Image 1: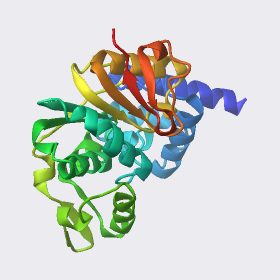
Image 2: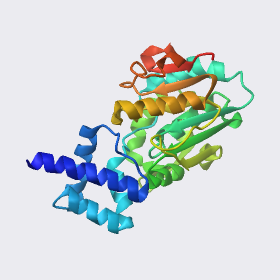
Image 3: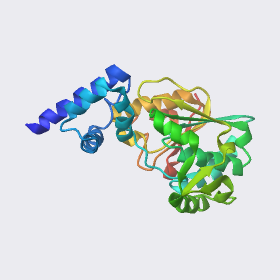
Length: 274
């Protein structure tokens, strides 16, 4: 009985978030949302989900704290190095033929992938002709991404990943370390536009040459996954590239026929000719 009540409470909270603040988590995978809301309820000190809902509705200052639980912020620079090596060796040679480039990092979280791609493009001589669009629904995550400051104890893993990705420089060339933190060079974000954007409710970004949306759609239900892929399809230029996470696929999407498997092992797809 209590299980049924909690499920109803979750449904009501998600509806309340949408109606009050226009954040739509209603089509996120329910098991994942339930796990995160249970964690939020406990850590924020509420006896029930309903009590959490009451506080969020009446105290907007609680919203960012709840969003930290509901949005995924687990990443690292050059995560899955083989993906970045594949971009370097197989995708960028195609992108090199364009006079200017647009890259969309959808669900950028705290910015690790943004800086990874900025460094990659800089090493390959493409940074100065590229505009990067880094988007997320969590304003605090976007602020972290724009700051580009990470705990120093994470840098060893970042450096290892960078080397495995085929890095042509030392990662230490791009940051300054002090007081247990590593601050990445402001020049790496001089061509980055940080923006609030929801794959659930917002519209297409037009004419992208590369979209990287990794380990975001695993938290969506099938309907929302299909909407996101439709957005990517509409946002990509002719023969543009789409990179997904290792556990994500276009296989069950109604938009699958619009893409060719460019590098299936790395979940990199290319938009077909119209």
